[in-house]
Length: 286
Image 1 (cartoon, rainbow, N blue to C red):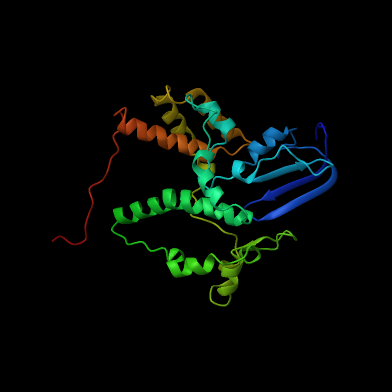
Image 2: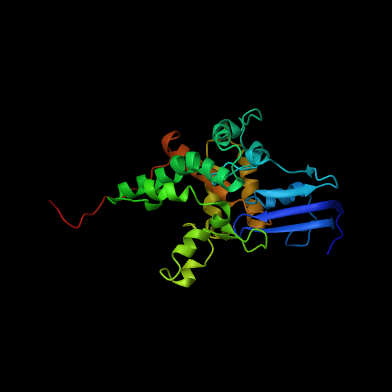
């Protein structure tokens, strides 16, 4: 293992949002390595841990160093690019513009709330109604399905809004960090244990693996043929794809977002991509 430059810190806090676990080191000298035992700077570490909302350093006076406030670092699950990442690919990037232009009003409304409630409040008024509910509604209606979201029933929501933090997420001090704690307790004995106790998971597809293997050439072709060079630095996008393939960074969400935009542009603006849409087949003819 290489010898990396040590950083002396009086307190280091790392919090994993998925498992809700927290690591706190006090009076520590730390070195940073990636999975290949290669030295990494703090900035590179933050970029590699792209989904981690907390990576904090404190000096001996308790002053936080190299960390962001909640308002600066959290703007929901729709976050794809950090500003420094966006600046490398978006030709029209303007550092004067920020996500806080959208989230500031919701954070103002939640002043004094606990951090989890504040993040939920941002999600409710941005990601929920502007992303996942819209997509779910469009996809189900396009297939003649009627979608219901029982957790958003007014009465259910009214009760959920009164749940304190320690019943939303338990064990934050001992590192167990059980999410949806009250819901899991309520469904104990009703839902099978192997379902009840597993970690929270949405409906992901393995694009991280696909873009390294079977979809790599397809993605490279989309980038090569795209006519979006006036908007995107396509060479930087291609480097991102290659870096994702070789590691250690996971750029899959960023690459996928850019690929979808390039496809949309190729269809609706350039007119060079013509999707093949099969004729629907109905089981009953009227």
